[in-house]
Image (cartoon, rainbow, N blue to C red; front, side, top):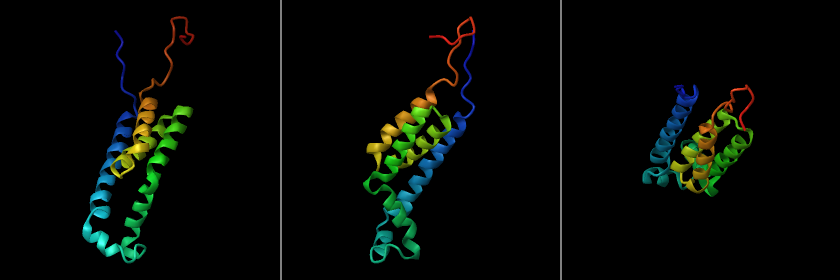
Length: 131
């Protein structure tokens, strides 16, 4: 009986997605949501201490981060590139944490489908690809 080994890049992809979620959670709860931060940045959102917060808010306004994740996932699906799918999954995970779940959830599913697909098509006994 033949066993199937997990893909070599799977651990790296999972680590990238976990890092993306961790960073997005930090940004959300340390920069975006605190009332004191919002009060300090409301008068001048582009001053030195508030630039990062303003950029993050711009990234999820109109679900921009989710649309980027979805576009990347579509490219990964059409090209069947696992590396692109890994980046799409990481962007989708961050988008789901940063208020862009409507477009990030389908992106995560498309990326997961690309990552779940076998690397090579199964071969028949004659050495030709199976149909």
